[in-house]
Length: 408
Ligand SMILES: *Cc1c(COP(=O)(O)O)cnc(C)c1O
Image 1: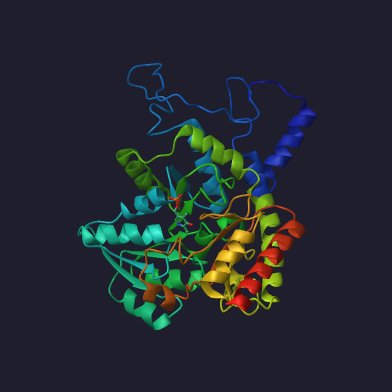
Image 2: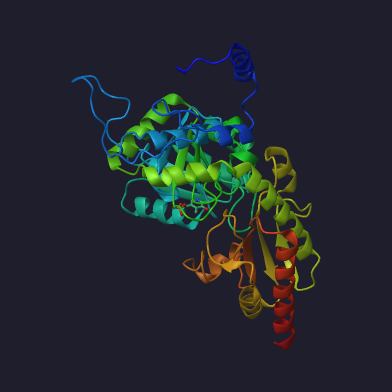
């Protein structure tokens, strides 16, 4: 800082520098604050320039071209990496671009082990790469220890983990799965989209990479599609950054700026969303029209104990099964007014989705049933609206579903 400041002020600042800055609220609110040397802007400016001037021929400026490096994107990347406890992050144009970026570290004939119930787009990408002969893919139920061990015996190069899973919120023991994968010689990547670093930090459990669809909780306002990969080691950050520049999948400055703005309130949003999810789960669990609730915060959930141990909260996504099948689901969804019927999760607005006909419609019917995805299954992503309004909306929907089931 070039401006002179009073000595008492300086003393306060020196003390603050030594204080613990690891609280996610402090990291998120302070990301890039006072980083602007030109005008001492408190909040970081948006640098849209595609290119940057050389002051001296042969001496590269800190940024030279925005595909490679952009000051706004760099601030967002640094904040995400700090929240996850990684060496650095690469910010890309979508969550799928983030998954694909990790796959770029593989070479021909490498094997990837992935959960059988991984994100649909991830499964489509892995299958497409395997069909072209780039890689091999093996899907396993990560909660089936014998099946997981058998897959590891085939010598995967990468183990992809998603916990909680979509839409049934199945929980994988991160430390145990990562330890086994490493023992088998594999790298490990955890898709942490459903919880965010506020509630789960896979690198602390040994993961090599953390993948995010920043579209969801990190941006949190459902107005940007974006992604990020965090790496535990600096050398891996460099490798990922090299590929992102090479293939041109880095995020735009404007998307990065919006995402940084959204990120600032992540811990506050999640606290409110999680409280709403807890109350919704309890209300649904008590309702006669509901056959089953899938929420790791409920003691009845099979992953409850592991989730309580490895997460700092149970998150704000839940699923539940209505007794009346498709007709009841349709009536329920169409009776809602606070919730929008839409795919995606993690925004400030509450969303309800019908996995059977939307996110998982492409999977053969038999496989959907085997995976526990039925016509009566509904997934909710809780927003930050007043709990009272959310609960009233759900009660009206359930009443309509119950009437439909009784008439059938
Ligand atoms: C949404 C999502 C993705 C894909 O992210 P996009 O930003 O839509 O490309 C990947 N993984 C999970 C768990 C997701 O929810």
